[in-house]
Length: 180
Image (cartoon, rainbow, N blue to C red; front, side):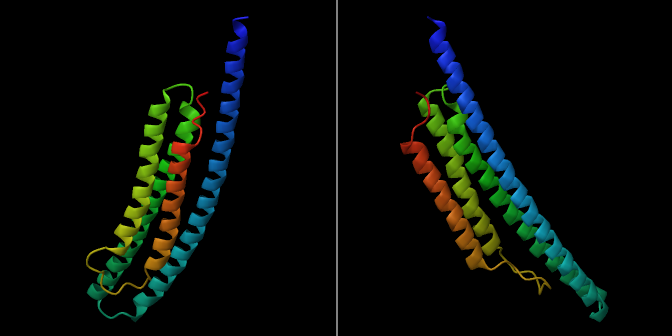
């Protein structure tokens, strides 16, 4: 008779593990989509590099060309930094949501809520910091060949991601923690 509750707990643990595996599969699919988007961005960057290479023939002074290339590198570095902030925010969001399922039954509910909340709030911070760093860069580089990402798109996209973070936080606080 004492083994029946243990068997039920094992079943529940197995179900949680299955749900976690499904969430991991979904995250893997999203990562694949992100990789495809990154590939498209790399192709776009390659086209921009070809355009930059053609422009070298037209410039007279090598010092001007080095300054222009430095400006292009600055723009690309800013885009990579933006992507890193967004990637970090998405990872923190996924970790905060996953903490609820992963830690259920292992640690107290208050610890699940605090851990998930911190991770989700950090993701919202990352989304805001990404826009802030991209839009408010300080001094502008001197006349790059490449265009910067439009700020309104950054605000729109990251605003949506921040809303998703807040919705996840609301779900974490007022949804079931899966503990019992």
